[in-house]
Amino acid sequence: MAAASNINDILSQVKQLDKEDQLTLLQRLASLLKRAEATKTTSVRLTSLSGLGSKIWKSKDDIDNYIDGERQW
Image (cartoon, rainbow, N blue to C red; front, side):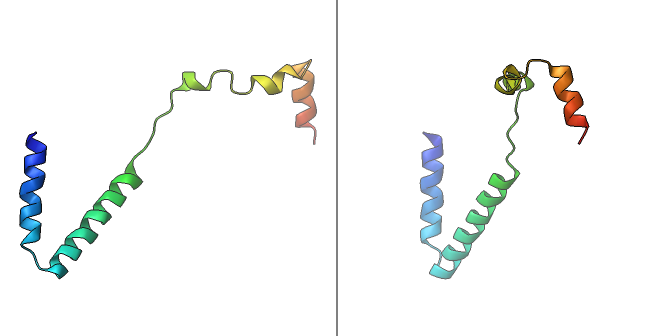
């Protein structure tokens, strides 16, 4: 509930600005949000990659022969 009150206070202050300052504020907020989104990284757990290529290897009878063949190109 306190956040809503803070937002209402901020909006009251923004309404007191002239249109040019409001637009400048809007541009700066948009820039701030874009930077925050650009620096956002997602982490992947290695365990989530388990079995990722299993469908490919099921069709290969002898993996050692397959790898040897791939190395000779």
